[in-house]
Figure (tube, rainbow, N blue to C red):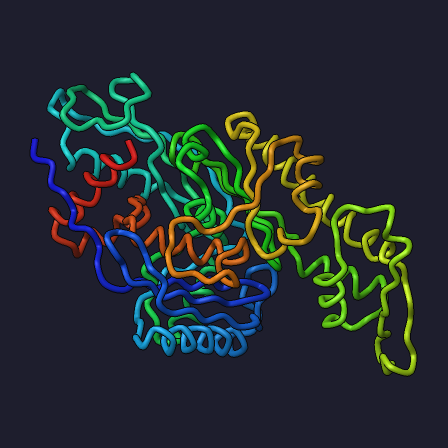
Length: 417
C-alpha cells in the first residue's frame, strides 16, 4: 500500500482569538514546521458576552483593529484565519462508527469512509459540529489499534470524539469574521487550542486536564493518549469576578478591574486586614469622597466566585466519567488564571497537581504575549501548522484532489499513532 506524505505547510498562518474581554491576532511565518510570530495585535473586546456575539458592529470593530495591528507589524495581509470557539456551550461526546470491508486490505480510502461516518452523525438541529476527531480504531471488534492501514478484516470501526456548539452562536461568530473580509480556515474550541499550545507530549499521553480561564467563560479539555477526548464549558470567567467586585464595593467596573489586577487574590492572607485599599464609589469623585476598605474584604468577594468555578469544573469532570482518565495533572491557562492564589485554590478544590501553562510551541512571542492569557491564540497557530486531521473538515475533500486529502490523513495517522 502506498503511503503518500503530505507536504509540510509553508507560508503564513493567522490565528484570531475572539474572547469576551480581549481580541488577539497572531500572524506567523512557518519556519521548519514551527510557527514564528511576526505580527501581533490585541484589543479590548467589545460586543461579546460569555464568548457569544451580542453586538455585531462593536465586535467587528474590535476584530478589525486587532487584525490591522498584527498586519501592520508583520507587513503582511491575511485573508484566512483559524478562529477559537468559547461560547455557545461547546460540549462533546464519543461515538462509535463502523464500515464493512469485505475481508479486503484496509487502505486510506477505508479510513476516510469511517471518518466520514463520524461527520455524518446527526447533531440536534440547534447545534453545529465543530470537531470530529478519531481517538482509536478497531477491526472486527478488536480494539486498541493505532493505525489500521495494511491490516485485513470484515469491519473497520473508530471511536470518534465529537464536539458541537449552539448553531446560532457559531453562525454569528462566522458572520462577524466574514464581515471583516476574512475567511475562516477552521474553528477550534478554546481549551483544545490552549492544550496544543501549552502541554508537553508526556502530559497529552498520560492524561491531563486543561482549564482555560477566560473573561466570560471557563472551558475544559481532557487529553489522553495524545488526543483531546473530552471538552466542556462553565459560563463563569474573570469578568464575573470583576462584576462581583463592582457590586460588592459599589465601584465602577473599570475601578473594579484595576483593584482585581493590583490587589486581588484567590487565597486570603493574615496580612490582608492591615492593607487598606482606596475604593472610588459609583457617581462620586474619587478624590473628594474616598472610601477605604481592607484588602481582606476584596479577597472575600473574589474567593467564593473562583471556588464556585472550580467546583463546577470538578462536577463536570466527575459527571463525564473522564476525571479518572485525566489523572492528577491540571494545566491552567487564560487571563483569569493569572490572579495570585488561583493555582493554590485549584489544587485544593480539584485535589490535583496544578501548573500554569504558557505557549511552548510558538517562537517569536515577547514576555507580554507569551503568558497564559495568549495560550489559545498560540494554540490556534499550532493547530493550523500541524494540519490536525479532523473529520469535521473532511467536507473540504469534496473539492480537493483525493491524494492531497489522503496524504493528510496518512500523515496524521503516522504522527499521532
